[in-house]
Length: 97
Image 1 (cartoon, helix red, strand yellow):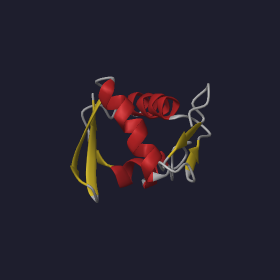
Image 2 (image 1 turned 30 degrees about the horizontal axis):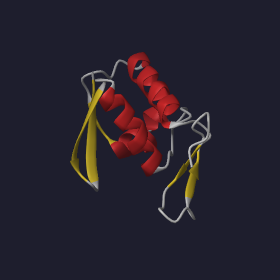
Image 3 (image 1 turned 90 degrees about the horizontal axis):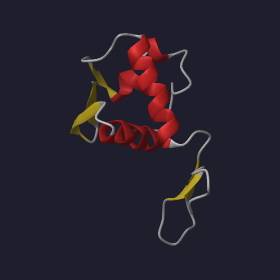
């Protein structure tokens, strides 16, 4: 399921599990990129945990973000050429450009 404004997405082929977005991944990506710019963290490597659970992001809307939604938002930033994600599943990091 994709709504016109991309607020929902099926996660299973049998369409019994869906993500309902408050903000879609593109919107989250923009918020994260703006925060990175505002906090002068371009070129800095952050773990995904630091990004969404760290003290620096405590006042941000993306603090505590679901890991799957975070991955989708970071994927948008990678496609835009603004980030690189690396590492293994349980220990991923991200560098912003």
